[in-house]
Length: 432
Image (tube, rainbow, N blue to C red; front, side, top):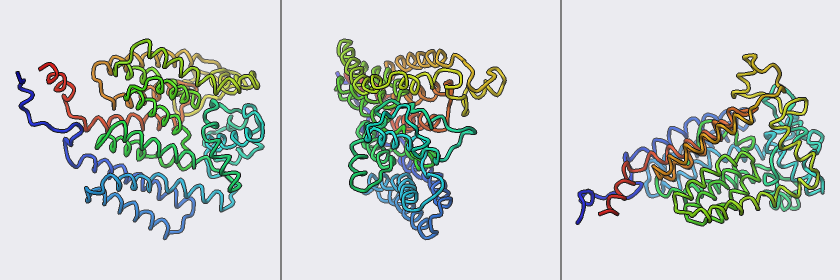
């Protein structure tokens, strides 16, 4: 017997609840992105004719997406590329073609690039002298000499993934800029989001992630969280397609690239469970992930154990003269300002607080995903995990705020287009 639900007019999954909504998001996010891009171009002395041409191109692409449904997909992607990638390319060109006393690249991206150069020369990137290699010329926002001058805090995947491209470009051109690889990671993220969330939800998620206000300001110096985000999304896609061993391997690679990618692992595993992965298969996936992480980390740990541990562990969570000083805009800075912590390098149990917060977020995400079963919510919970846990770490910077914010925005906007009650309707139809 057909249920009453079956008599309702069907609407395709992801169909618009409000037709102009996705276009409104594009327009509203494009405006601040364009203003920030214009300011970047002004500070870096782009000729006025270049700035006007770029602004006109970006405006035309946004208008094409709004007014021409037949080219909306292509025009939206091109608009994001113009607003996000063109300032990055401009920064690369200006740094390498116009000499300047300050390196027009962020310390994280430049350090990754230098780590690859050290490795190509047979030098251990951990404990290397980055100040002498040119890192001291990168622009700083901290009120102290950057600890990155003498410590490589990320795990090896960060510089191993771009190494083949870096080696080829250095051999062919004589120079390399890490932001080329970060732009490739951005393209991968766009494609992965469109595969994860087809149609309007995917477009909304991708636009929200890349045009979140101030993202292009970080990207122009080098948003080195992008490779880890791309790997997490690839693992999520594998879980959604029930490729669970691949999911585990990709998560292991993400953790070996950026340690705090570990915060997303239990959330992606929760989605794999929602997709029907048995416990035995999840165990095999976890083993695959651990094997991939070990394969990348162990060679450098064996190469120089004390230096590797000092750079990637003690420096980040320890105290004393060799610890990362408290700074930024998170809980640690508030406690320091309030006098609860007396010195920027004093000991404080931030790691214990982080573990407690991470466990709380993982439990909440598990319960939510088991009940709601919405793929977009996985992005939101990953963003929440990054935001809350990194906020109570020893340092919390604008890049951490952006990392959490962009994933939350992608998940929220993608869910905005989901049809209310769609899951319940599906269950009722199956029961009937």
